[in-house]
Length: 81
Image (tube, rainbow, N blue to C red; front, side, top):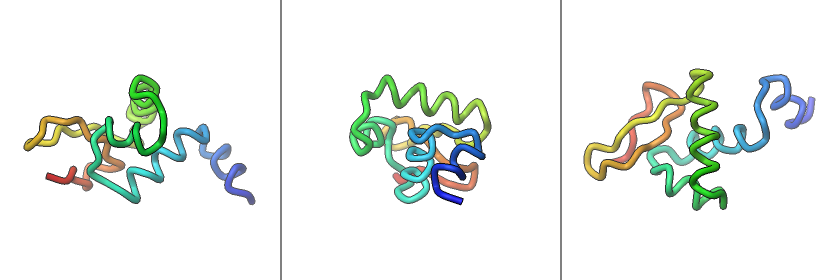
């Protein structure tokens, strides 16, 4: 099964899968940093995060030091300080 087929079976868009991979590999980035890394407008990233959060695949956390919102892949992941 190809990567594209696995993504489709999980009912994820390629953009959603890319976002999940990025925040799993490089946790603790703010939404602004994630948008820059992915080369996507921040407004588009917010929509991606919203959809994944609605499905319970990620959650947002506020960094207590900077106040920036950080998408996390699971409740066990803490944003970097």
